[in-house]
Amino acid sequence: APAGWVRVAGATAAVAAVLVAGGYTVASAVRDDAPAQRSVAGSPASREPGPLWSSGAVDPHSNEFWAQSNITLRTGAPLAALTVELRVAQTGSVTSTGAWRSLPEEDFTFTAGERDGFVVYRWTLKEGRTVPAGEWIFAGQYNHERGGRDAGGDRYTATATTASGRLSAEGGFTTRG
Image 1: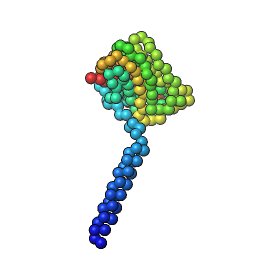
Image 2: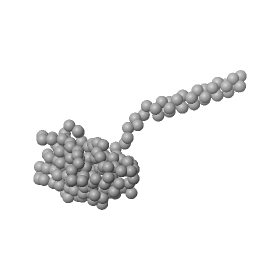
Image 3: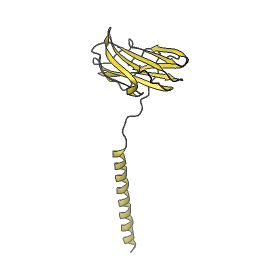
């Protein structure tokens, strides 16, 4: 009789192990694999001119053929007007592949094109829309010649209006090594 109980206990343990492994497999398969919110590294060109702070950085997920330049803006007050311009220097085969911002797309007019040796991205807040206080990212994406790209000639500007007046910020980007 004791050998029977050992077999039952062993079979029960085996079934439990299979259920645990199966549960882990199902949980792993159905979990949300969406990428985490990207953080932006600070740059030597970070600016804090009062209520509008800015920073520019080449995204760490850029590669030898493609890059993304991130502009981070932080404001302590709502913005009634905002224009953000990213100028990516034409260092060889630079072509836009897209852009995004962390604010609603429908709140902005967006343009991208080549001008004066730069690929220029411009986001303009639509009339009647407001940017709430907070931290926001504007990003331009582009292909470039193979190899590391020097972002030293890239620039950004941001102009904004709050209840207390007009604000501006500008800067460059950290260089990807």
